[in-house]
Structures are given as structure tokens and as C-alpha cells.
Image (cartoon, rainbow, N blue to C red; front, top):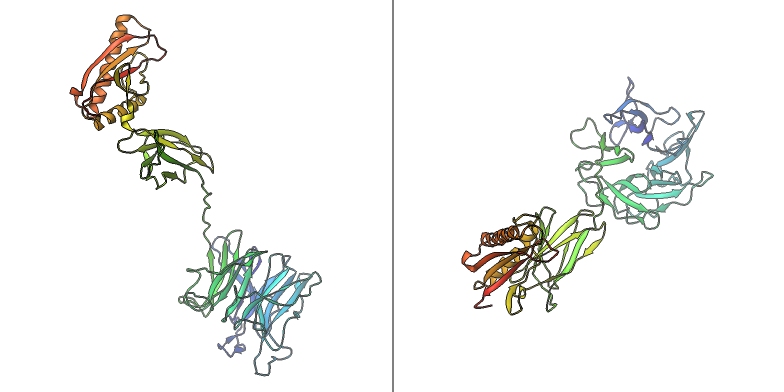
Length: 473
């Protein structure tokens, strides 16, 4: 048990005298005494161990100690004896819990606690962090198993309430021993749950209203196929100690140190983009439509097919980040939407897809493939990325309807001379033609690409894509 942040008190049967001491008949080892050792904070080793107190240690067992928050009171386990060992009517010498207080920096003679008995054992005391509850182990009447964990309240005058069994969540028909309570979790050893073998260390979360939760085995490397017990941990630095008789030790029961790894908590991510894909004209839902999520550079991050109800959702997205939703379906125009995520919220984006054939319209008796206005940079004829997306729609229509033949007409605004504007618009028309051909359209399907100079408009340039011939549609 921790005495403070720099010292640990433990029990040991090591014999430091030059002469043979009294032996405990069960294991032919010296009786247990309490020792105190300093903690090496770098290595977590225990060093400079000394016997704890002559007033506490006797010729019989002393072990399993716990201290009040101010270190002025201690409870520990000792054999039941006065001038000699006391035995019940079956000849059993039971264990008892004793209490000692500190006066002038010295521990006083220990006295029994009120819930001890000559007919059963009490031991392994463990105080809550506030010192108001004392947990302990006993085989008293009312136990569910061989030994159970009980608790009493410590009143302001130092007396105790009646012991309460912690119940079947913690206790089994076998042994529950060595409790350690940090206020939010109970650690203890048991051989009554499914474990790795012998006594294993378990934990149970505690809630003031709900009580103790279902126990969990701490697993390896704390637990082994031997006895593992007397587990304590410092919640501030996650360093602690436990005892075990596993293979590879130096003696019978050895003390082992450990440091628990603190896993970084990942904040919950509720950022999502969701919606429903429908057909624009009919409003029908579109199951199995492919929806892609692209980053700001157009790189595909995720994709999914819509559910039977046309819905889709992309989850675990970055905070306040702009994405592109691209919806792809045969015989439909690819649809792209810019969407920015909202922190811990789902952005709803419903998408209506347009059939390729719906891009073909008749205006003034002329069939045209209707695209959005296609822009060029000032005094330039190269195809911009936004223009390429519109022309890709045209390419999709021409691939869907392979008999369509078009001609391209281009205009400029009124800046520049008439002859220069005619020259520039012609370059733009031919640049448009070349891009369409580069996307796999036969050059013979573009009847002409002609620039007509300036028109009175506010746009930099418009391109009209006229359908010259269409045998089937």
C-alpha cells in the first residue's frame, strides 16, 4: 500500500536476523512483518526497506495495510492472539483487522475493530480515498463464497456501521481478496471468475448511484497462470505494484512494479455529409448510384453506392473542410457539388441527377446541346478547368448518342478591335473542338468550329454547341 507518493509499505517473510526465527507451519517460512521502502521514481524500484514499526510488528503475521488520507490512522491484518494465539472450536486461528493511530509521529498499540470475531476471519483492509469507507475481506456469515469483500462506513467518531456484502457482481463462490479502491474503480483478486489461472486481478468501475459494474480481468502481463494479487496503482502517474508467485521470480511471492500506458483519447467525430440521390425530372429515388467524395485537389477519398432508398452518408470527416461530392451514373450527367462540413453535425445534401438526353433542346428550330456558359480567361483561348467540366458533359452526350454531329460557335465581348475579336473567338472555337476530340470523340463528328467575333454581352465568352445532324436520339 502507498504510504505517500514516495513510500510503499509491504509485508514480507524475509528473515533479517542471524538466528532462526519462528516458522509459520503452513509454508515453513517466517511470519510476515510490515516493511516500508522508498520509491525510486525513475525505475519504480523499492529501495532501503526497513521494518515498519516495533509497535505494529509482532512475532505473528502482520500484513495488508491501509492508511487514512492524512496518514494519522492505519488498519492492518494480524493473527488473532492475545498473550497466545486464539483458536475457534475447530482449532482454527483466524485473522483480524487492527487499528493504530499516530501520536507524536509514533504509531500506538493497535486495537481490534468492532466487527472482528473469534469465529471467522477479517483482513485485507482498504480505505476509500476520502477515508469514509473501509473495504475488507471476510468469511463471516452471509458470505457468498470462501471469502468475500465487504464494506463498512467509518463514522466521524471512528466507529463502524454493520458490514455490507458487495454482492454477486464482485463476490463469487470462491475467493475474493486484496481489495484496492481509488474512488472510481475497485481492484481485487479472485479465483472465482474465468481467468488465466490461480488468483487473477480484476477491476470493477464504481458509480455512486449504480454501484459496481461488471468485473473485467486485467489480462496479461499483470495476470499469469499463477497467483497474482495485492494490486495498487497511483492514478496520477499510472505506476503501481502487485505480488505474484509466477515463474521467474526470486522467491515465493515477489513484488512486481508496472506502469500503465495511457492511451490518447480520440475526440468523438460526428462530422458527416449525407443526402438522397433522385432523378431530376421524375423525382424518383436512385438506388445503387455511385457517390464519390473528393478532396480539394479532386483526389477520391471515399465512394459508396446509394442504399435502396437512394440515401448515402460519409462519416468521420474533418472539421470545417470543403469536399466535392461527385455522383456518377450511366446515362446521367455527372453531378458535382461543393460541400463544407460542420463541426459535430451532419450536412444534408440532396442531389438531383439529369439524364444525358435532357441536355438536348430545340431553340428557334435548332437543336442544341445545352451546357452552362463556358468561360475563357481574358485574351486567352485555353480551356479552363471549369470549362472542361462543362465540355465533359457534352462528351458524355456524344458518347451516349454516337450519331450526333455538332458545330461549335464562339464569340467574344466588345473589347478589342473587330478583326482581333474575330481572330480570338475563332481560336476559342477551335480550342473547344480540340478538347472534345482529345476526350475520344471522332473529329468527323464536329462539322465546324467557327468564331464570330464580338457580341453585346457581359460574359467574357459564350460557346454555343449546335447539333447539326442527329439520326437517332
